[in-house]
Amino acid sequence: MELDNGRDRPLASRHLLGLEGMSGTEITHILDAAEALKEILDRPIKKVPTLRGVTVVNLFFEASTRTRISFELAEKRLSADLVNFSKTGSSVSKGETLLDTARNIEAMRVEVVVIRHQSAGAPGFLAQRLNSVVINAGDGFHEHPTQGLLDLLTLRQKFGELKGLKVAVIGDISHSRVAMSNLYGLKALGAEVMLCGPPTLMPRGVESLGAKVCHNVDQALAWADALNVLRLQLERQHSALLPSLREYHQTFGITRRRLEKAGRVPVILHPGPINRGVEIESAVADGNESVILDQVTNGVAVRMAVLVLLSTPEVALKGE
Ligand code: CP
Image 1 (tube, rainbow, N blue to C red):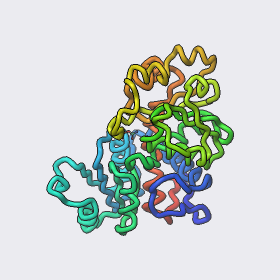
Image 2: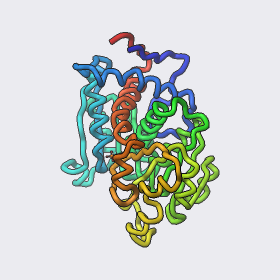
Image 3: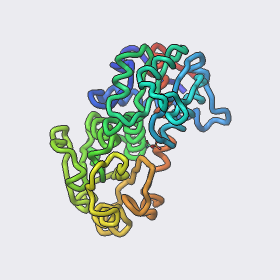
């Protein structure tokens, strides 16, 4: 394995807060690093000493399965020391603020803070106030940059390159941090992006970010090479934006019948967790065109790459 982290192509920021503003070159650099590191996951002993001596805290203020486990595995594979924090059982329940919690943890000599938080902007808030590197593991409806990167890596593996690729993101766009990170990342790499969902779940003015907007899923299916199907973010919807889940499934659900009617077979992505029978039918989620579990595997490699590039900016790993 050779990971080139040469100084001619550094990442502009010492944090990863989002893909907005990141150049195609920077994103490609992370994806290339992830490809190089992925090989470690197939070794009998899945461990390298790259981050020995680096301490990472995983601050999860919101539920997570994939992101949390995958960051933890990435840290273990790289020999970092790690500490897991969850809101339940912490002093947050006694009224401690986010900043006080983070400053106290940093005082224990932590170099990297991975944070998932229900409030958009929480990682950026910490990045301005801590000395540690801050990595956004999903903040409210703002961004989920490592999810965006793993989606890009999965598409690149499937299609070879992303320039000119047509990707439709389907569902609850308004409340989705995944949609935003996909949009920024795909546009940076030259892909075309369509956002498709009910008008009540579509942010106003999103066309100004370079997306096509559509409210008819059959049109999206006829256009796209790949679909990224989103879960309805019911926990972030504070008013009745849909008549019913049944009607949503009938109008926007990705079903085998609908794909057959479209006459083409797009690659199917989903960030998880899946609500089977709502945004996607099991026959599609588990079908031959689905790369959902490849996304999960790629998530570990992408998070390893981000950790290495942000924690050891001068490192070039050779043949470990
Ligand atoms: N895709 C994703 O963020 O999943 P989790 O909420 O399980 O981490």
